[in-house]
Image (cartoon, rainbow, N blue to C red):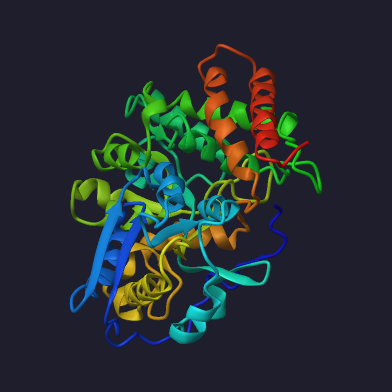
Length: 411
């Protein structure tokens, strides 16, 4: 199916709401599947306080959530009553009918929500967003200064020039990192960079891929130029690895998720020198493009189709408790929250700058996931020098086309 109308408006405005007083649940089984980072830990911990008096709350926070969610929700009853979703994962679950409309529950229990939090697909509320995220630039200003780089890079060409100066000065051999772990992470870096060109991933009005072009070639060449300044093990670098390298003082320039900002800027796991020198800024542009080379994401709450209505309602109420303004105030710096009470901080500067700069949302198209998978599987050969950019992109389009036909998006 094609998702015709998707609404996510006013994401970066402060929202009017009030905290929910108590959970107000007398029975029900709540089970939550999600990614694992500080903001989501705060949300799920608050939801878990609803346990007791006939209510059970279980959570599974794992970086592998995307790999298990479809099977877990296909079971009947579903293994989880809620999944914390994003732009791409919501579409994946909707394609198989695994999450339910939330309109009635929003009407009954969502008085604290703003319309701008409601992710509406074809006129139905399918998720409730509570935070925004984007990948953007983290810089060590002390290292840049030592290398004679006067300003924080605004373009990826600037990043490359700065990296060369840092290496030439003998400060760091591998000063740059992106989340380039083979698979989903690497594909996301391609998506980010390609979005910076302003080009479309598909031929207009169709599900036919359109990345084997000059923009796609330039995107791959820019990624290859960047990883030339990265650790040779760059194909193993996910968010956890990149953050660990940053906190260890081994990097000067990195593209990381905004949700990592508070953990990088706190006093844990690093040194005072690294923390003091770290500045978060908007995702760079490149190739004379005006759009930051990143994608805007939201994280939000979806409720499983294959659970009882009673468990679905209990889960929704528990999750409303998890995203109350009290929770946000207690965890202000953990995210760019879309909830009343949030106060922007240095940890949110990169996400806010990326949004203000005009970065576009990750494409919420039902067939984007198939292209993302194909990118993650096929572009490593080019980065490792075993095939041309054109051949890698031809392989991407061939793999995508086969998957899209199998899934019914192409004839």
